[in-house]
Length: 258
Image (cartoon, rainbow, N blue to C red; front, side):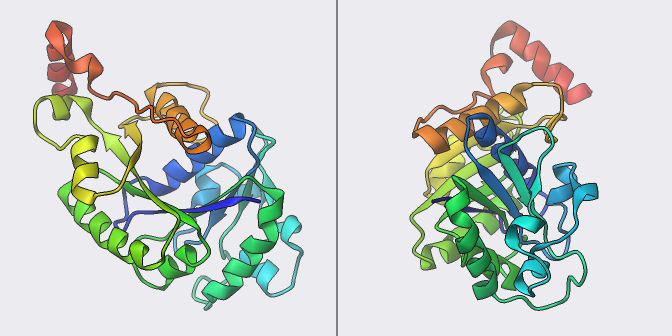
């Protein structure tokens, strides 16, 4: 039976969809059967990040309204046989879909998977509640920016009202050079402020789209996050290590000028 985990943020632009896609890929690489679900009926770009938008025939609303069976709407990723995508509403984004309808679809699919990762819309409006109502656990995605932290704090307060089993934190777009220079808070400090466990640190990278053939620090960080989720480990990516010492100071200088 799948663990149903919503990835939420409160604020848009924190890379939540990219985190969802890459975490799903790493879990699939570990041998888990993973379903990625896009519940953002407005932007619905999870399929684009996963590079499967041209493979869509049906979406979640087609399932709910009886135009197809659930498995007909699932897209198997061409590069990861254990990874599937359930697209959002592409035909009528303004159509009202109840949280109960989404939950029924995911409950029926849960026995086929180990994880169902739910990409939640930004904010705490109806789309947020529709996603969270279908979940058992949550990963709050934030960046070190103050506005992102404020919104994350508001989202965490709402998540607590749902009595979820676990609420964890993933800090995205982390700049190790800025942490060393004292310009931003460290992920550990952020976790202490938000008062939830830190499960992942993802550095700011340019190579985090699913299926990218390059394997930089971003993918190492996602592998750690996936292992923490699957195996209960507590390893976190060290974004600051290469910015200490003499050569680290040169790297920090170059980072600021490039």
